[in-house]
Length: 216
Length: 363
Image (cartoon, rainbow over all chains, first blue to last red; front, side):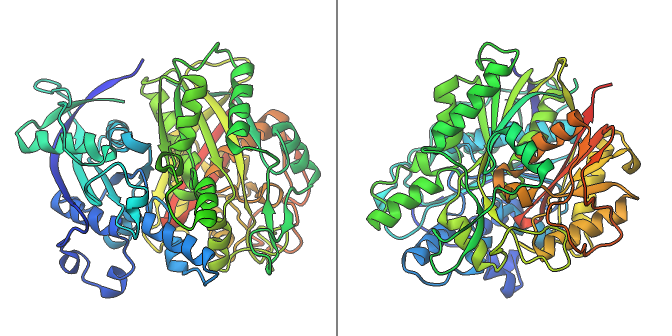
């Protein structure tokens, strides 16, 4: 048993790069250098996606399978090397860092949910965003990012050719289901599976399909 | 559809749920002073007894199934709340090998907990939430909403976090760890105790003879600072108000608040202020002086405590309370035997992520 709802995809964006995404327009999106310097890579990508989706305030569902790997590695390296742990690294290590920075920068006091469901993270984020839209009747930003660009990642990475990636949509409940379609199966060679379902929806939106069914 | 808590079990530094409630009412802490994570620096930690964290997790879930009205979990959605997932195991490999070669990335992620449980119990589906210390409170919030809209009949919510170097040393780096048993809401408190726990609740759309209703859930963001709460307590007030609105209750209806109450200066000052501003004379205490702060599991284990407070009709005293910082809120020094209809449980997290849940007695 589950419940299927139709959602309007209002805006969508995606970006990925084999190693580091070069231009995330950080200086325009986050003019204050003191804050910009503290942002994690996931936060910068998330802010870029939100900006491209023209989302400034409201409920956010964020997803990441591996979260703030760069911060986590910094902490474990400090423990291993018996050096001091940076408090900023620790505060940035939680999985909800990226949307929390969005909240800080945009004075967004609404709900933030962070999903980390492994390789189906973005699918579960879509389900959760649809639920949030259904119960609130508001627009919801659903965004997923992965940043695996750490030293020696090749020792563990067997899941992606893109070490930095992000995708997002702004959705709302469609009260009229006519014209809604199922999420199309499509492949994105080399992309980490945790982002795949959201990227499918972004690609559908780019191709003119702006109403999709989502199983809660 | 209404959401009912129809079963639960937990394991923490004071043992199972029965032992947990006995410890809370007897004010017997499970915190020990430990030097295994930082040899030169004793800190108070809440350590569970287990050989293998995942065996322990499976055992708690099996107990909930055994006591439930279900034969299996094949038509049950699993929602996990965790802040560290498989970090404990990844650290062991990394500290031993000094490289990532033996780290299984799927066992590092938060989803290792749901993966492990899906293998053992064949849930119809699963998802995992990681919003730091509100993780399993948010798992319960989502479970309530999914039941309310009729998407699922049975949802198992699991809060689970194991102790690891990253959290113990990380909180130490922030300067918020106590070297003693924490003393929430005291004037001279000196920090929190990191702890571990597994807490499991079965949320269903049908009432049983032993149900507690999950009647309200609210959330908010501070939009103030990554680790420090909004000093005006606006975020905490918003999540508590949103939960009251969802439950269609007034502040005066709440009999007891199980506080987030970590024992840090910042949290307890702000939470106390928020309660002072929103409520008149409600009883509030933190059970973290017994369990420690179980991070992503805290929302779930404190949901269980909230249900037990209603069932036992006994508001727990604030353990280790000597001189309350906020004299305007009602922090009981002794257990109070009374009819308890509604309990609010607060969870607050890094990033200014706030969640409040309300549990209600079935009339």
